[in-house]
Image (cartoon, rainbow over all chains, first blue to last red; front, top):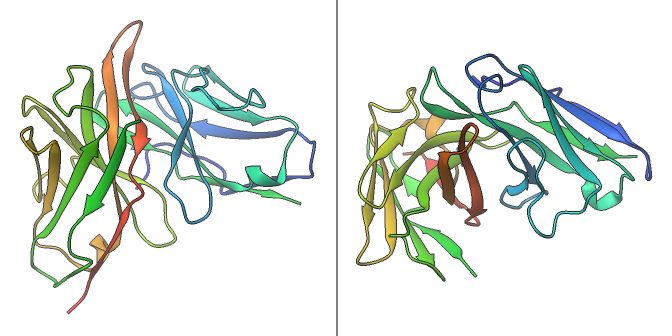
Length: 110
Length: 125
């Protein structure tokens, strides 16, 4: 059972802005960094955002992350067809001494 | 460029032990900056963190799997391995290995920045 909660799906038309939420608790998001992973169909996950809002080299600035209290968000602006994928948030949980993933959100480009 | 490659049997019988190896190329598993981890994904479901190991042998395990999991490292071969005992159909999944960055700055950080392509393991008689 996932410790971090995400909406199962999100959608938008090309060019729109889509936001995905990730809800946790004081032992994970509330006290540690949040990360986001993108999983394109049939492929391994890829690091999209690290330390709440940092983008690895090569990740377009259309992707942005934020954190407030025990929740975090991933925003995709200027939505493109190639953004259709599953997105997972993650954080370290101090109570579990474990890394925990969100339930995952499937983004569909209409 | 760092690459990770999972290997091992694609089919394991119930009650037996699942064994996988991750071979690291393009970098040293003995680097002081990294842990090395395993993550799995059951068919059609989300990601589950299994655990990770430092080159010195220090480990973190998912509490829900801890009693059945052993992660080990072989620095001479630049490999690390996963053993999961007493498997059932619920352990059927794609298993990924990954390089993990871990440490402290303002907060504790722990994240997988390079992933292998994954290997499918089916538990069935």
